[in-house]
Length: 165
Image (cartoon, rainbow, N blue to C red; front, side):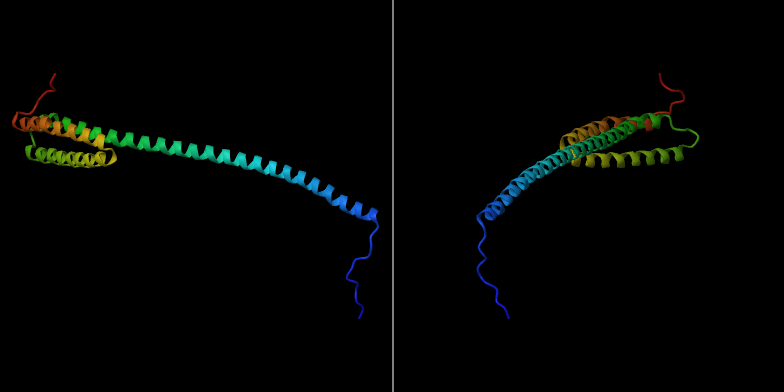
């Protein structure tokens, strides 16, 4: 078996210089490429970051607008229920005279359904916004006092045969 020498054979000085300068030039070239690559990647990363930020902002804005529209619709429905209750004294006065028992049942069921919706909207508005809930509660309390008295009077008064002026 032949043993290889542990020491490298002597190299001419010109070979060493050529050998040492080539990697230095190569390192400088690859360093410039790395800088260019980092610049491109940083630009792409920055563009992606800006795009992501804009998309997140747009999604939040859309979500906020949808939430506002949901609240508007729900508050409008609560007010519509208030208005329906307010109109009940007039409906009672316009009841049909030829079927008094059926009319009493129909109007009582209508009143029950509207009162159920009022209770729902009172609880919902209070949970959704304490300020709006308190204002709606106050509005409904005043309505019940006024319209309740008017409904009681409408039941005891004779029904309307013509539309009042």
